[in-house]
Each structure stands twice: as structure tokens, then as C-alpha cells.
Length: 165
Image (cartoon, rainbow, N blue to C red; front, side):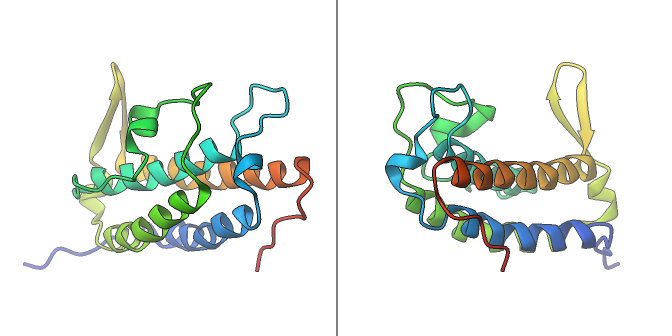
């Protein structure tokens, strides 16, 4: 008996595809020095936001069964580790390379998910469990949010606006 893939992710995968492009557009031209600037705030800088986005895609691939996948900066982001002061994060080029590598792997994995899998619970801590569908939905939302933060940093750092095409 053939297991039927879910069509519940169709709209989310369309957003995933858009955000794949927006990620690169948001980072276009940002210097390595600027990627670590926080402008006298406690806000997450571009380098951390970028690595966090990359880790999120690697994490979801691992949740979908490919447990060997890791980004180059895995130890800096694993287990939802927040920004660390006094750390120089890898270059944006390293993150872009990992993004480019994991994106088709995750997209293929998402295309294979079944409705039954979407109901599986993911334990996120004591008393916190979310369905895979809810987690994917949240992660797609979070991607848009973080890309928007990078787009704002572009303007705060004096770069032209992010292009959407």
C-alpha cells in the first residue's frame, strides 16, 4: 500500500521557496564587519540571525529523519542557543553555503511528509509538545520574521533596501 503524501504543506512550501530567495536578497552586500554590529543595543546582529535561520532548517531536516545533517557552525546554534557576546560568528558566506546545501534537502523532505507524520508530536521541553504541522508552520513564520529583521538591519546599517525580486 502506497502512503499518500500530504498536501497540507502546499502553501507553507510556497512561502519556504519565497524565503529561500529573500534570505539571499536580505544578505546581499552586507560586509562581515557590519554583520556583527549591534549598534549599542542587545538586538541580535545579522550574523547571529543568519546562522540561526540556517540552524533552523538543519534542525527541521533532523526532525524529519536525516539526523546526520549539521551546519558548519552547529555548536554555536544547537539547542536554540541565543546570541553569545564576545563570539565572532562565521562569515555570511559560510552561512550562505550551508543554506544552499540544506535548502533542497529540506524541501525534498517536506514534499515527502504524510498527513500522519504531520500529527506526530515533537517534545520541546517539560509539558510542551507541538505537532509537526504546528512546528513547521511556526518555523516558516519565524523565517519571515528573521529575514525581516535582517532587512531592517540593512537600513539601520546604511544599505539599500532588500530586493524582493
